[in-house]
Image (cartoon, rainbow, N blue to C red; front, top):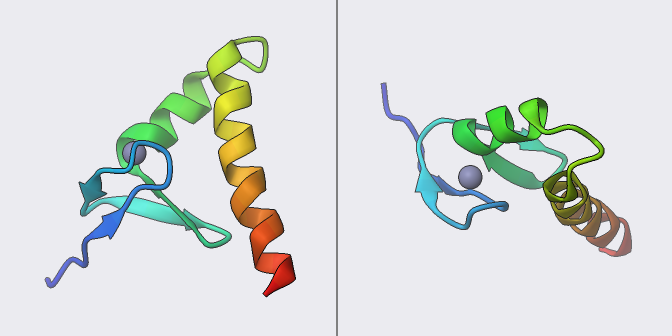
Length: 61
Ligand SMILES: [Zn+2]
């Protein structure tokens, strides 16, 4: 079906399955991790920072 390969903005690996959140591509695995991560978890902050960084950079373009 011609899946396009993108680089995940969280784990920096090339993946076929994933979603775009703003301009950040997130692979299926990372998406699941983000969803299953509690906001109290320190990893959650890491994901949020990543997403926020991309989101802010899109404003300046
Ligand atoms: Zn990933």
